[in-house]
Length: 132
Image: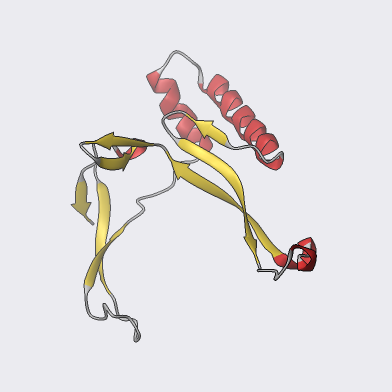
């Protein structure tokens, strides 16, 4: 198994890297909740239905916690937290929630490990690369 990449040339008119080539990660497909449950079922003693129940409850619990402004940390994966896109207000009195908060989004910070001074995403430890 390897992380796939494809080379692409930067052709943006105003780019200082115009004409240079860069590697971009390639997505080789999507694994949905059911497939993830089947994979987990093969690797442990739980049945797929049990895994699906846990994953569904995880989704519901995370949603409730995030909507209550909690940060949710999953060991070995990372942390999820709500974030805001906002417009600047000159003073606190000038701030209006309905005007100045333009979007709400989910932030994800992957868990990292330190290997000889190099921080790496825990989920990508042991990676290999391959051109697509």
